[in-house]
Length: 469
Image: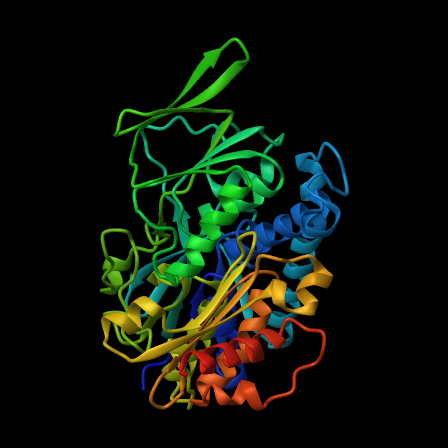
């Protein structure tokens, strides 16, 4: 047998890389984790998921958004909210999550190396640590690899990015002030999350996207509901519009951003968040030398076991594309490591839940109405509005909605879609029933604590059964 330095080398310490490394270590495999930055956690902890969700929580608290349904639209915890106010807790949470991640890796005896990794051949990587006070360049070999390098934000070379007036999502943590007006170019998950956060803070937001629907992979009724909430918060939706040019201009009030649309419209705004797509962070990996294929956006093509075109080289997380969520990336990392070493592992990607932290938040699992209609599946719908539930009144959320889809003939649950406070937590009840192929009757026959938002399941189940006549 060929002798290698490691059983597994993981490139990237985000959620997918962490979970792959830890799973391999649990299986008794010698594992090395390579991270190009001085801190672990990748984009998820340092500039992406954790900071954005912490910023969202700070915005909800300081703006008093959750309590406005009770105390009125003028209610807020703090007047004149600033960016330092919003970012105050972000640094604390990031430091804590980095420390927790580092401790997990250390106690599982995973070796770590800081530097830029690039493939020399299919079983060898070079680690470049020059300029960091490290050991320069070194080479290691491994029987298996997991690539979890994530993505980088797309930057149009014709746009004058400065990190303050025109910026990408990675720049938000360094913004100096909260704008009065903001244009968000691109209404994907990242763009729409930040759009709703700024709208909740009272910023006049304009959302521009060339697609005619927000988040097309989500149930249409849920996204229509989200669009309505945005408009209630004075946001303007420019869907079906393409950006032709984006530049800086000056008027009597100072420097502004001018956005010219292909339709001829012009939008003048104080700041612009450019959030059109992300590309796989693979440009420095020298994947050609390893025989690994990528698409035109730098993403690695994998099979159902997360193997690339080289069977011993796996890829997980954002670098392989949709759904690009931290939760799914973690599971992909675990499954990849198990598959590499022949360990039994089961998972059902069709039942991976999606959590989208807009305001209000959205979470969904299973199939949508559009998918069921397309496939000719006979289904019925059951709905519960938060305003019908005592807990909804108590917390002041009068706009939330829980929606169940089930088969008319077998009554089997097919999908759960939620918009409203706690959606990303509430979804797991429905996920469990879906996993066990349960029916709508489960919710009818189950007693939920009172008052809770979980009661929505029972109300929605009765509503659905009543629709059957």
